[in-house]
Image (tube, rainbow, N blue to C red):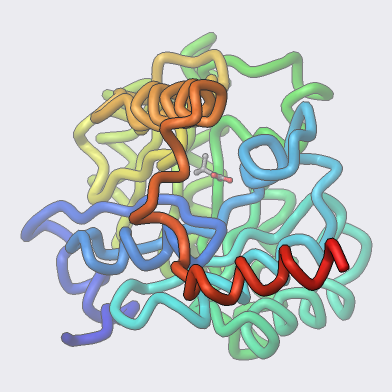
Length: 281
Ligand code: KIV
């Protein structure tokens, strides 16, 4: 088993595509790690998928560190990316570096990801300069989507929008981001950006022209209702499969077929007889 590293992913650019999946806990980290997928994202999507928030903005640094730590303890092969939650990097650079450092030191991630436009390039640079590798997340940025007009495809509305996404990508690269993730960027625009950047790109709803792809694991296995955009693909309806098992268990408990003798521990019948006798006396 060889650990996937940033230079390894960088070396794939122009040669072959790679894949990333989200994981927020030990069981899913193990499955992704064993699947051959190159990268794990401990995304702030955990706010909706794991914690039941209506969006990603309520997620705290402590919540991110706790989930990332369980992934960091478990995954041995994948490159692990930890998401910087909303307002963990915007206020000032020192706080951003400390928070990125928590994900590396306390959770064991290999690099961090932060959402933004060219405006966040200086904070990305400050984190990179502190020695922490950064992925810049551009296009649809769910943490601030509400203030930008909701969850939409980004960059296709006008030439100015498309140009702004190109500028965001170039600014993140110039800031030292080793990779740029594009969410909900039209396929041809994402392919063009991929062709002009020297760093790898990862797409989610960005078409097949990106260097890598990412999906939200719980969504692709029918365990999370989804984000309302046609990004994903259901690879297996594990959610329905698990629910069927739960319904069967419920029925078995109701009709007495679970637990059976094979699910119970035996005891010497004489001991029970003695207990009963002494109880009566
Ligand atoms: O938090 C997350 O899962 C993400 C992906 C949607 C890329 O940022």
